Length: 96
Image (cartoon, rainbow, N blue to C red):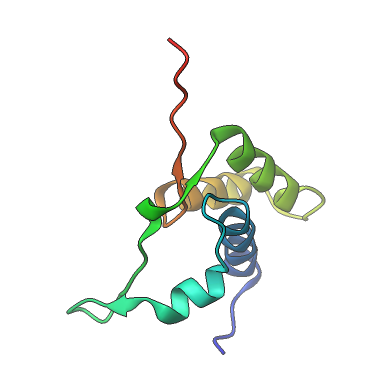
């Protein structure tokens, strides 16, 4: 197992919770372990196959960051990493 720094561990914990609460629900660690590698040796996660509401996404991130001794900048970096990383896509709201 890879040794992660504090920030990376928080990000992985957020991803675990996001995928656990996504539709369909999946274990993030199993998803990563089963992922194929591309020609550059990077894991290819099929994150578009999973959906989560934007409200649930934000709730999970805030819950995971709550009580952590991190600067505002570090918390924002974690949010940005999760949004731009391999998190599940947002469900569409059909309110028009």
